[in-house]
Length: 255
Length: 316
Image (cartoon, rainbow over all chains, first blue to last red; front, side, top):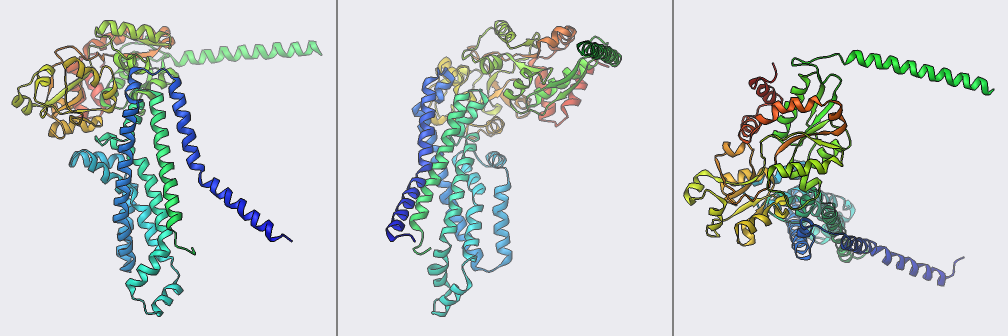
């Protein structure tokens, strides 16, 4: 027999473990950035490396990278969630198929090829990069919106209808809240995709940390490549961590 | 027991020597092949590598064809991507050799930051520095695949610019540049150009693009007038671009030369004498023409290489 006190204690320690677990990504980011900084400060950098491995250059690239990522993800949410809802609500198999096929094509098309094609046909720069990133990262949100809405139990839906709710009310007050954890999980995946794929913005004058990575690769400057790669990975981990916190916070009670 | 052991050892040793002799004989038999132009290189086999652009493919096929015509048994490997990988394949002894550029080796592999302006001195410096890496440099071809700035010909006329000094005097609104990210941080790249020509334009006038995009962007004049291009590229003529003269001789020299594993050159010194007949014919203009056949007309690099060697009377 376990005493109630012991149960309480066990719960407390479990919660503490949970809190520690929550901060693991943050700790990894801080430790890797610290290690990177230490390593770089021990190296003797030549003039080529100094032009990229300096605070103002790095801050500018990180800012561009995060800007591209967040704006692209916001656009993804604005496009994919309504598209998913419409595809679900229309009950049309054809519409659903077309929407998912487009999302699949976006993700399957090599983003590097897409960005350069748009640059040649249309223009170079920020907006072209945005299009390529959105095309690449739209699928997870679209699919999760559809799946999230479809997995709502038929009984729940029927009881809501039985209480006299309209189709719209059921969607807004029952189905969407119940689907929200799944949709948010999709958005989280999209965010991480966007961080990674934003590195190709460098090819068309849209900046970001790809500048650093490509520069280091082409010129065989190992510290530049490592710094660029660690920074991209850190941003991905951080954004995923923040999105996780948001996901926890907005999760409907009782789910 | 020991006596027996010794007997066995001697027996094994004799057998091994016999096998060695046999295998020696058989390779001797195989290497009696000869090409259309001679058999000085009989026994030389392996791969000639290349980086991932037209000029490199053509040079790899030219080298393979001419050396095979002298009895070698080489194949061209044009599958690697990026200078660094190609160089690594040579230092790892996977390639017999490939064509490299003096400026690239000096800055990228030998980790110098400032180029040497005199072509011969630059070549000598690279050659002697690479000896320590077990890499031999044959005498270079005259082709200089250096950086240069190009602008669409109509715009060059309109703006009245012929040299980079002319360009530097233009109003800032006309002075828009497209460069590669790599070029943006090299001492022999953008920072150097800015200093040498006294270019002072807002940061937004300098766009960072991928190499391939620069050519089309320069042709369109959007987002820039002046694109950083490579001097031997066939697209300069095909897209009707005009190259701005580097009147202050700022740019480093990127002369092409065949680099080889040093021990292989030592074993087959004839490689140098054979290549000495080919290299001098490869000028910047000649290379532009050959590159255009691949990049613009869509011909196969292997065909372009063979035709050229035949036209030059180097192979039958």
